[in-house]
Image (cartoon, rainbow, N blue to C red; front, side, top):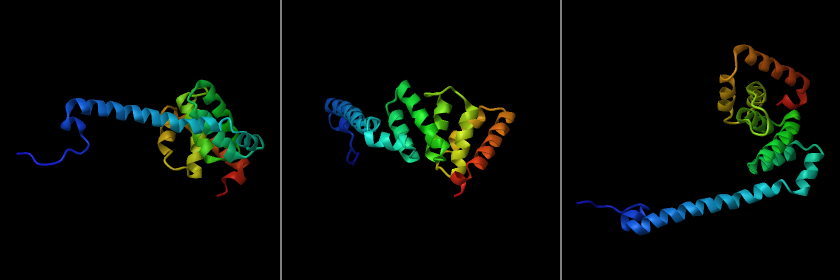
Length: 167
């Protein structure tokens, strides 16, 4: 004899109703995801954010990059890379991580693990959480000489951008 209560297993209660309940739940998840993307996409059209980004605000540039990346289109990734680059050059570690990721995944920029490693190493050095895996992924696609060259490039960048790396 089996005792217990089925924990949200509608098919255990009624096989036909259960199947439709799962389909409905799946559709609701898709609808919710679409609704959540609307604010991200509309941030790319925000005139106040665009004005701050054009004025050189690294945080606004990173947010604008996030908005364009959220569009999930080739043009969106290209725009995102351009904004991330502006913020990353100013020392924004989130932008450095995002830009390195774009280079790893060939989204809006050419596939370039050396450049990806450069930006990701800067982000890791700055303490961006949970990004060492991405840097390791880029590292795994490079020869030892390329890693050494990228690390030297990181040190040179840090020397010329001391005000951004002094934390």
